[in-house]
Image (tube, rainbow, N blue to C red):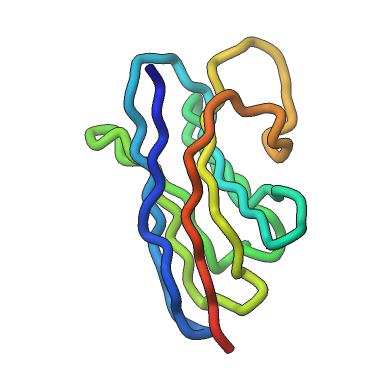
Length: 126
């Protein structure tokens, strides 16, 4: 059974940093890992993606230069390092995994991912 478990969320002041972790368990061939966030009453939005095929990374414009997605193969864990946090970053953060399929897809779309974690709350105070 595939499981994704996020951790590392919390309360931080504006300008601070947090590192989110997403631990993967279960056997499956994944092509991409993503981080998404969802604010109260809002839709789930793309934050960052890590392509397991070639280790390329992609970011939503507002987090470029502040957030970094990475993967530790040995630990089977994906990280999201978040620096210079802003109150607008407050949301529940979710990690997601996409099973390997051939063909192109939109890595920013939640519907492109097959497995999701339970989410971890990030709150940035001003």
